[in-house]
Image 1 (cartoon, rainbow, N blue to C red):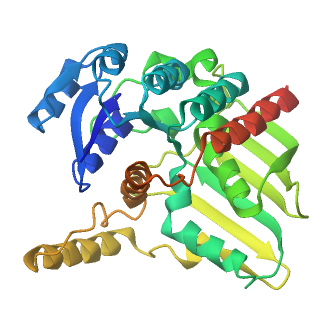
Image 2 (image 1 turned 120 degrees about the vertical axis):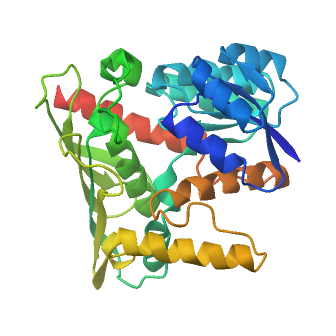
Length: 341
């Protein structure tokens, strides 16, 4: 049985907590968050060790097998460093850290510790992305020539039925590392690397429609170092969308064909959710394991990536997303900010 802690119980941290509670051979024994409401909710779910300061969790629960870190970006470096120094395996939400220098230090600390560190590059676990990677690796569309990657949403301005205040740190580039590019574009740049290997930046353009100290729109052009593949990344916070609406697509044009995420995604998210919900009901009646979050095509990968991480910790496998992947992505993003200026 793996014992774990969850640090940061915001939207993503609470999702990771709920997913961990449904993974076999995993027990959440400690959580940390400044919110008493979040801690009380974790306690109601059976978590006994509650901390208002993540440093206290990391220093007082050194027998943990792993921690999930879902804190604001500016706290990633110190929390990851402390976790590794206390001999814990780490799953950390993206970005790995807010600067290249911090990321390089984390890479060194991970190698020195001998522990597993996985970064939450969740889009690599999308069913559509995994199928597209298989198509490319098998040569079905020939050598990839151009990859178009788009993800547009409402960023920190999104909310559910009841609007919530946006935390002040969201709009401080010193704490976030940047705006829409490091928030949403991070995933798209990582996917370009996932499909082609290491890459270099060719062009960068940022827009500031909302007159904020960080960009709300970004367009960058990439080129693979090991091949002729080029990429166009377009991302932004300017679109007022609420989930399950999801404006995301990847198109890969090859020498003998093309493939797209749209070939594999459900055409109607509500019908898909109803169908998967019925399948889970039948699994439950038959005494079989239900597929966690299967009703939500875009949320299910968060469960899959955590399950993969815990399997790597338990069986000493190498995670599919390493600290070096986080570093390489942040390097490209930092260069994009420099070039745009």
